[in-house]
Amino acid sequence: MEVQESPSPARSRVSPVQAIHSALFNAILSQDLQPGAKLSEEAIGSFFKVSRTIVRAALTRLHAESVIELKQNRGAYVASPGIEEAKNVFEARVCIEREIVHRLVRQVTPAQLDALAEHTEHEHALAHEHDRAGALRLSGDFHIQIAQMAGNDVLTQFLRPLITRTSLILALYSNGREQDCSADEHMTIIEALRAGDAGRAGDAMVGHLNGVLGRANLGVRPTEVRDLGAILARHV
Image 1: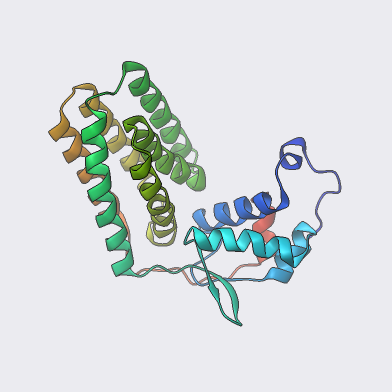
Image 2: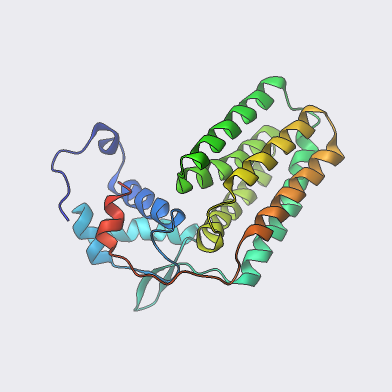
């Protein structure tokens, strides 16, 4: 597939490594790239017209985020988190995010709550538009925003990779119909924070995370193999 010779202004502002990273990441979250799919360095480099060194830099970043697996002498593959790993990720998030909302409820401002509510409305809109990758990204961003508002940078740093792994788990296992539920549960968390009720806010967060895990079809994985070039063309 040919790439346009004159990149758009939006694309020209990002580095080749970032462009490759974003395209692959969005393709995985959209379920266009399936668990276990091989990511050919040659095919990616040919599509973006870059060297393998640049492709490997993007793949290394995705590997650090637990989105792909790098297998010695075999190359890169979309990660395939198992059921136990998925459960462990959500268990860790429950421990961290319960504490985060307990801290936030003591200091959250009306302006911050309004920003969270606006963010959730946008999440609803993307879900209605069937923008799966966008809705998943906004869902993760919601939790990062809450952590940042709570003011503990260490907890935020622990949470970031867990959210990335959660997005991958949902991209692999969910049926794509749960995003409205997640957005509704985000509103429940906001309402508890607005009420200044730490116990209710903690319960709302735990209930939300358990609900997300419960809606995932753990163990059910698609097996369709698709053309990598055609997939990348939809995400650049």
